[in-house]
Length: 336
Length: 304
Image (cartoon, rainbow over all chains, first blue to last red; front, side, top):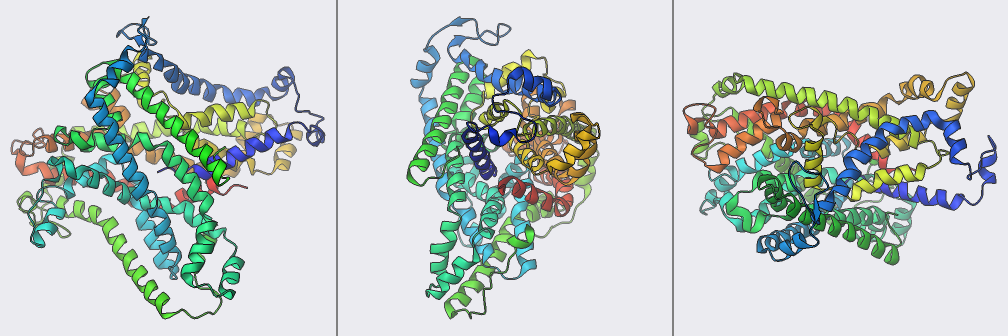
């Protein structure tokens, strides 16, 4: 779960504000008679020290972010180990056709949709509920301790989380002991594919919901107390206050986080699944990213895996752009 | 900021309805239960770490250790590879955090100057990488091409800039009083001097927060090392643990065969001990560093 949403929003708003400002240079002229039409030559001369600070980070972005993006070209070119990282010859849509006719790819695709969808539908709303629950606590110290405990799993390495999941779901683990206590039979969870979605979503809830409350709690503090007062004077019960004042107050945060979650929909917990799954679980656990890991890294079909990865990234980009556009049209909140 | 978050819910002398009182009690009980569920996996790890394997295998160890046993700690801590890998984790975390801080601070400082020509472009190329990235294979090929395989650089360089941390620092620097920097400029300090002698000393809180953000993420990371390291002596401790888990789960009976001749005897217990030793530093530091994280997120989110 991403916590950077509001920030991105703030960023976007600010960028837009700057664009709006641009046509009115006199505002900026006050101090050093600078205009927004400063030429690059002048800007470089004046701010060369600032630009020098940008050199390393921008080189970094180009090499480690933008060159790999360009490297996706091998989805359409044959890649030979030892040859150019951008491939040797064009093969057109060969690799795309390959995965379109690959049943394993489609199984991974639908598993991704299912796990991503479950995460979105179940895990996304829970921090809102938990934040409202925290908000109703009156004891400061109890609230603080409860919050600290709920944040703790966020700081755990995914390897630790996987270790805990394996331990709890073991045939002789705590969950099976509880099942046996209530008269059931132990379930070999990690050998039965039908259990994987439940286990995966539960571990996501455990790890992300507490930390996810932070932005909502911050948003709750920005609601004007007078609104609650007015609602009470109008005879609104606590429930109606939550419905008519609290929820609308945190709506922008909810929408922004929803858009970002939709954007990361396809990238369902790759590392966690890679650590948890085994061939018995592939029918429900194998997602696009784990499949392309096996195709690309284990079997060294670089071009084929890149085609799959590019497809996944493009879906992610389209999803976030679409969600953002719909949100801007309908409720007026958007990332940019 | 934090005072406002913990604002009491009680409002203006209105007495609660009975329904609301019931709700509050249920709510409190639920939160206690959720806290217990959150802590349970940790407590289970501790209990299993101090138990003997026989009790774990017969499914009797939940919250309280049974057949108290600390010899496994001796096993794990006696494995030179465990310490070697733990040392690698420390080394990778320190180097990666240092590099990341230099990149992030300089980038954020330059971007915080609103008059900088091309600023929107530079922010744009950074933010775009949050929504679209090259993907696993092109990155893998790039790292191999650069010759970073089986070197420290494969781990410490490719994740040197977290765009989220960058934006947090940038918004912090933007809140910096301009007069101060202008006065320093009049006193003859260059941009470098201002950054080094004025801005950074006054930004200790945000720098501490960023160092923690980066350090925790590098401490916890495993995949880069798993992908780019072929030699056991280069692994961080997370990969050590991962290999233990994979060995134990692939064939229940063979688990952790490398650890000792009596393989079944060690599996669950050794896993628990290794997990405990791996999370220990974070859990111990957690009460002290938690508030910095929360304030870091706030810093990012409540910007005017």
